[in-house]
Image (cartoon, rainbow, N blue to C red; front, side, top):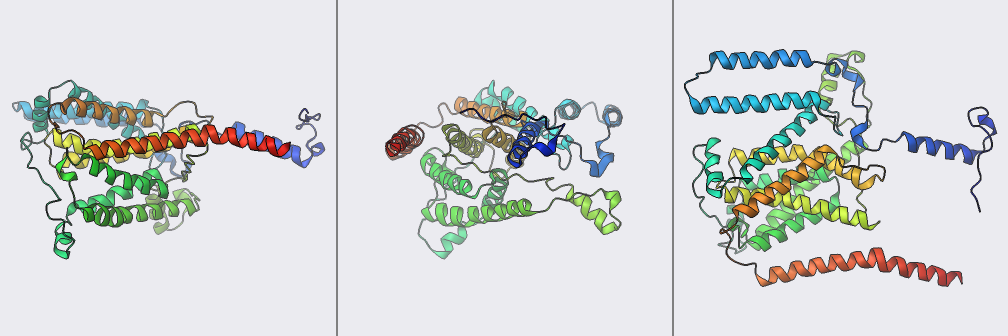
Length: 428
């Protein structure tokens, strides 16, 4: 039976439409007006008009003034200093040009230009990785001395699994600065992932990865209570809990943005200026991996990318001889957090919105970055990890892969066929 068609022009006589027809028209208008991707929304924030006026000439003047100062007042006899200033100026020019020319990302707070700058930093980091990929392992280690002359030496091996008796003294000795790093890391990942269940899946998965890779990375060799009591149920739980509370706060918050000029009190103006660094709105991530096979595959791919981002830093600092507390490691983690915020939003839009036909620039760039890091690890790891994977590790992850494959076949192939057969039997 054909669907009933509207025989009345809705613009000429809207009163002649039935309630159902009006709802159909409203739904069709809403579907047409929905943007295909957050990258195409209107990025201008009218509450702070001053910051959204073009300032390209002002930026050009400031940039040239900085170059003039360096050219006239920096000692030209120090070649190493000149090289660092030159590379710094090169990166600055690239970031400024990118801020002017790149397209806006999914976020508009604190300003779209800030996130264009973040994308520029991701491109610069990727270019550095590509350069490192074409060096030898020894040269790569020596290049680290450019950032710090104390680098380039073999790191002492440190294991956390020497004394695994569950005593107060042993647990207290296991608490160090990395306990805080665990909590802060999972707080950041909760803001990126925005899903309580997925955070816990990834938290447990990472501990299983530490068990699996302890024969390659000595600092993964931890006591059982370090894995599960200190890491999972203390540090990770605290970070996930606080991070998800922040997500709930932003989800339930009423976003009524007034211009600063409309606020009468000085305190209100200051509060509004501080609110510029909070989200303009908030999107809850509902992954629903069992809905269809594309959702399941996208969910698994997202988890793999998160694990890749976690493990890469451990392998890179081990292969390049960078201590875990070094500022380079902290800078890499901080940059990756900034890269991941818009990337996860773009990935979720591509994952959940059927009208979104292409992946955003932030997400695409971050995936390329993670894969380039992996290529560097594969190249530099030759001759480093001679010990083969333990048999129980191979068996365990083979079982996990088989379970995932069997679940996908049952959920998205067999269950649908059996369900159709049962429905036909009931109809008969």
